[in-house]
Amino acid sequence: MTNFEQLKAWDLEYLWHPYTQMANYADEQRIIVKAKDWHVYDSDGNEYIDGISGLWNVNVGHGRAEIIDSIHNQLSELDFYALNGYSYESAIRLAKKLVEISPRGLEKVFFSNGGSEANETAIKLARAYWKLNKREGKYKVISLNSAWHGGTLGALSASHIASEKKHFEPLLTGFVHMPQPNCYRCPFGQTAHNCAMQCAAYLREIIAHEDESTIAAFIAEPIQGLGGVIIPPEQYWPMIRQICDENNILLIIDEVATGFGRTGTTFAISEWGITPDMLVCSKGITSGYLPLSAVLATNEIYRPFLQEGSYFQHGYTTGGHPASCAAAIANIELMEREQLLDPPAERKHALLSRFDKLKDLELVGDIRGRGHMVCVELVLDKVSKTPYPHARKLCGRLMEKGIIVRPIGNCIPFFPPLHISEADMDKVVAIYAEVISEACRQLAPA
Image 1 (tube, rainbow, N blue to C red):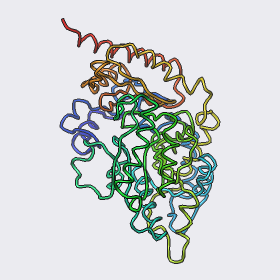
Image 2 (image 1 turned 90 degrees about the vertical axis):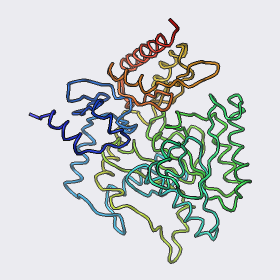
Image 3 (image 1 turned 45 degrees about the vertical axis):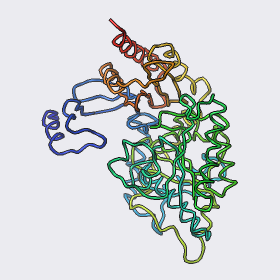
Image 4 (image 1 turned 30 degrees about the horizontal axis):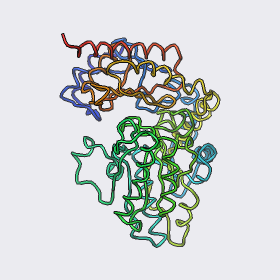
């Protein structure tokens, strides 16, 4: 029998947790012992609905035998070999599969281990591409305010969340940021349509100020995740694509969080009908069963690296690990069978339609989402939109009531596995309503 008290003591003594204030960790310590479908269980016997899908990545849910078996079978046959100059079946088959399900025109696949590494890869690819095309001065990367592209130094430099960056500055040079298309808090004070147009058009001002000849790429999430689940209006991405084309700027779309059915389609950018020059994916590619990420690129990006004496001098030891690729193939095939990549319309809108019922609550300023990516923005006043300062405390109350979620500033998201039952969707929304209503009463004057 497992001695959980001993494990808890060792946890506090030896383990340094990411993104965790260790001075307070003992008060919040939970050891997760098992998981199944969209539920997880801790060492004290508590059951939770997994409202963050592990970390926005367990798209098909926990404990899927097909994926676990694929990992075992692959390791039994080939445990590891590097892709540096060699190949193997699982990597080949997965690359082909990714090209088949991605936006038309993306033809080549480069593997790494996680989202940060993949975004780092895409940035390096963009800079190398222009150098090989004799445009050595094109090195700058434009990204959005409140963007999150990862923790490695290049990906962090492209990100724009102050609390994530401040301890690691100075960051890399050559990164420029512009307003996010947040129509609820439009930086230009516009209505939704005009906000989208003005936010996209602002890219022209950035280009004029920085000089097109110095700009390599524009990188952004199609729907910002840590930025607050920001969903651009329909005109935004086609306009960004057009401006990039007019100015010889590569478009990199970061689908680390949004890919593989999370927003109700295989890749979120498909909803806007455009193809980027590079598409970055991770998280849902294996549903978190093993680490893996990929950069999908057009043949135009790939071609310069075929020149005599040229190749992409970049890679990771375990990028495209045989077992990770096998897990991804099983994961994608499972999602296709269960219609999780492209679900019926009623399923695609089932979660957001339920959360929309919370809009009349006093503290709820906005509710945004696509597919199984929903966010409730809390405000002290619906007119002034003053951010509600206690979202973390409310997430604690939700956990006490059996839902694991993490705040995003003044927002509370809900990103469950994609096959969560409608009965549990109803249960979750009822608990959100209860917790938010309780917070409303606490703010009311005596």
